Length: 154
Image (tube, rainbow, N blue to C red):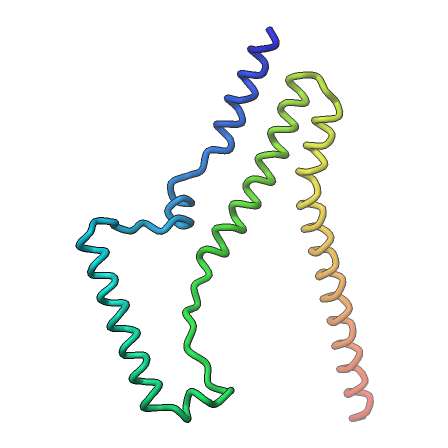
């Protein structure tokens, strides 16, 4: 009977933690590894190195300046994918702990799972309440300033 429970746990974990194809595609670069493409890549790399050396020779003063920086590509897709993965793993573990706590009648597991689920929502609510309070204070200050300006004009 114990083996059936462990098997069900492994099945649930394998269903919850299987990576999606889109995340795999975003994290793992797909490249062809046939010999002609390798030769072509090496040739292109050599040509790029030669061009870079010629450019440095032509514009030595430009490259000596500290203010000059090479243009960097702004590619934040991998950062967003990792953030989404971390958040999804966080919520999956919280939900899994809650479900396992109810299934196996272990109150510690489902209490931990529910608190893990509640933490992000409480942080969101605290931030929302703080922003509402700050906007209310700013509105009061604006009204007070307008009233002072009206009184000073009179």
